[in-house]
Length: 241
Picture 1 (cartoon, rainbow, N blue to C red):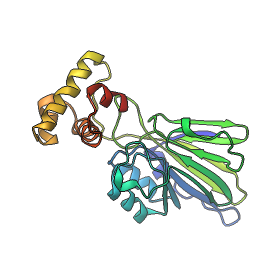
Picture 2: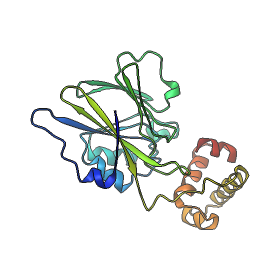
Picture 3: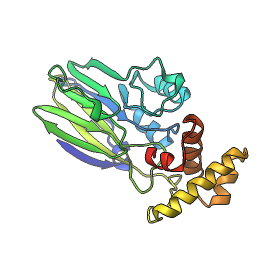
Picture 4: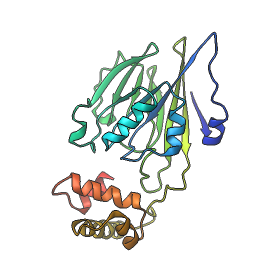
């Protein structure tokens, strides 16, 4: 059911179409949090359709995805007012196979008898399993990196006979700098408080990153959570990361 490829191997083997049994590529991503990596776009450009499991964070990300391939997305818990037009759940049929999409699988209804493939996100952790003939797939996060969780996405291939195969894609990026996961909870709390104080002062993200000795991606993530969740404190920010 599950295969695994690295980016170089994948780029060297893009021709999977057959005159007798066509295979359709579906790029499955989630939790981009405002960052669409070049490595991810290179893979998505080979896909027929893109599915996004939520926490997109920017209208521009969705618009860019639509220029690559038809894109279907659901609203994540960190998507703001701009995403009000996006549904929290979505049912669709692609190449004869019925899908169900939601950001947080804890909110999935019990009755999914009409769906063969369930797409979700939220945890930033890649997950694939088969339950009662249904495929459950979380592509993980391929946007802003969360501590030491790997950057991943999934490629789903469906053939003319409605057979499907899912591949886990590990994304390696030189820009994927993160905060050391060995940092203690106390130190993390103080770090987030410092970032919040600098945000209140109007300090630029690039300067916050230098002052706090962290990546700009991490600084941006904390700033965004603070600014989009009025009244949230440092503990609340950490819980949402």
